[in-house]
Length: 168
View (spheres, helix red, strand yellow):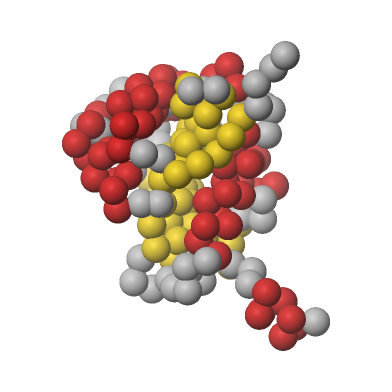
């Protein structure tokens, strides 16, 4: 009998597991861009704990194992910034990244200040770009941050019941 994956808020005691998973997941990104000094690979446990505390941070669990995670925050101009969506390599291509993205978006819809979602990825990260585009994100900016890396920022507006009812 197989176990199902559950998504819930990250807890302080998840921080070390999230950091290890983040380190594993970002190896492919570092290899793709030839840069092993990217922030997700150098982030400290204390910094990650602070991000979890500020929240929201979500995890996906298979039994007791953290197999995916995502974090975010809403800034002062109403942009819900979604970051570090990671899925364990053995769990990829089963829809878990999309489920986790949907879950954090659902969380931000309940935030009265969230007017849009925004995230970013590297220009060569085709799997990430494909996922984000399939969820309605569109590129709004790009910035070359190194000789091998251009960051692509993608965004979409939030959809609230009030806005939907007003346009219907």
